[in-house]
Length: 97
Image 1 (cartoon, rainbow, N blue to C red):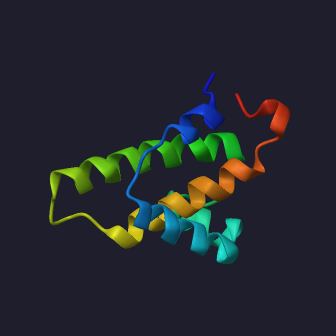
Image 2 (image 1 turned 135 degrees about the horizontal axis):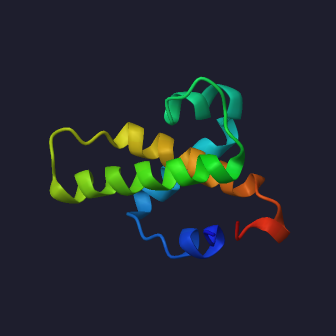
């Protein structure tokens, strides 16, 4: 069982990344964007999508911190947008799934 609200509340990222992701939430389209971001054919349920998004975001943050040339700020923002949007889709009483 993953406590998504606690996990997301403790996530610490540069302010500019978070601001960019919040700005992008208005244009998020689950059917279009989620499939692209997690590289799947169909959009999974929000809880399952969050597991994949959290793992991908952690991987991207490790690459960012290492200063690797392969780091893509655009991809990182896309993943953060999806992460925020999918977290909003979880039922309040089942947010700790």
